Length: 249
Image (cartoon, rainbow, N blue to C red):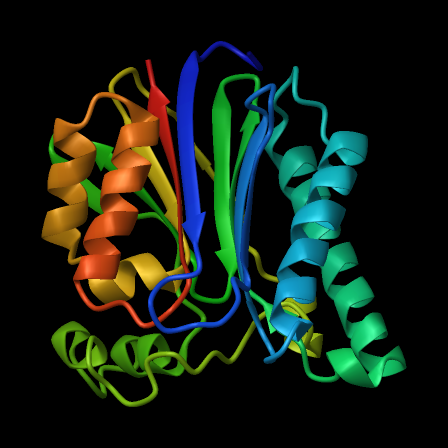
């Protein structure tokens, strides 16, 4: 286990009821140093390729550039941003070279565990949540048009749930805007914390209340991930559904 926290992890990714292929990808580092979820877009095999590249390239660069044994926040944040930016450049490059992958893109959300401190961030609308003391909190910010409208005070958070632009992103990997701003924030994990990383397939079908209750009442993270994905599927999610659950023991 990296750092001074002991972690238990579960993960599930399914195609869901409405899609032909699964454009989501996730990664759980065997040493519990980092966790990633990516949700690809671009149709056919393009979204699948983009999310796979994001996971592979970010994982590779994190292993090279992050010192997981000592947490210097500034250096760690810089290394994570470089890793995400590198993946963004490679996705853009392949999109430009190969017509099959033209306009492909992907979201990404992550937890990077450095000496027992977490760094949480992302690009797009895949999210990371924390359940602590019964309260569910979204730790990442969506790069979606609806979130921008909420921030501007134009619409309410309630309106955003059903807004026609709720799945339209202004920033994701595979675009010029994607190269900066994954905004890794330091978070100090506590024993009893439960974290969830997910694609929007989860939040499209499962409310915050459902997610909170399943995280709170399920003591095995793999079972929790399965239950959350099932709840999203039964709740009418029309997308691929991916969930990683991390328990701080």
